[in-house]
Image (cartoon, rainbow, N blue to C red):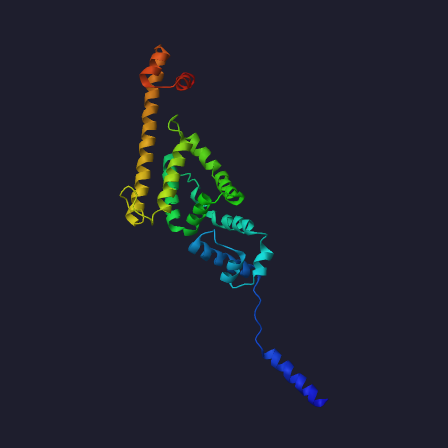
Length: 256
C-alpha cells in the first residue's frame, strides 16, 4: 500500500514536470489561418484551395477550419473583405485638390497598389476566370463602395463627351490588364514589368487627364462666346452649328 502511494506520488510529480502546451487564443488561430491563406493565394491563386490544404498550411486540425466557415464561399467572402481595404484608402478624396488632381492622384495610387499587392492581383484574376455568387458579390461590393467617389467625379466632369464613367472604366481596365500581364511580355513595346514601365504608365495617364481637362476649359470658353452671341440675338441654330453644340447644350447656355 505504501509502495503504491509512493509510485502514485512519483507519477503525479512527473506529470507536473511535463511542459504544458499553451493553447492558442481564437485571435491567434484566426491570424494563423489568414496568414496561411495569404501564402496559398500568393503561390497558386484561389482555384486549388481546399479546407484540408489550408489546415495543413496553417498547421491546424481541419476541424478548426470547418468550425469557422460553412464552405469555401464564406471563407473567400470574409477574406476578400479583409483585403479590399486598399479601395477605401485609394478612393479617399483630398479636399485640398481640385477634381482633376484628385483623379490623377487616385489613378496613380491604383497603379502603385496593384503593382505592390500580389493578393489583390490574384483576387482580380479569380474574378475574371471564375463566375459564381462569391465573385459577383465581391465585384458588386467594390462597385458600391466607389459610388460616392464616381458621383463626385462625374458631377465635376463638365463635358458631355466623352462619358466620364466609360472613360474611367477604360482607364482602370487598361491599368488592371497591363499590371496583371506584366510578367508575360512587353505590351506595345513597353516593358511594364520594369520600374520605368510603371512610371511611364502613371505619367501617361496623368498627361491624358491633363489634356481632357484642358479641353474642358477650352469648351467652357467657347460656351462663354456662344452665350454672348445668343445675348446679342444671333439665331441659336446658327450658334449651335457653328460651335458644334448639341441642342441640350444650347438650351443650357440659354438658361444659365
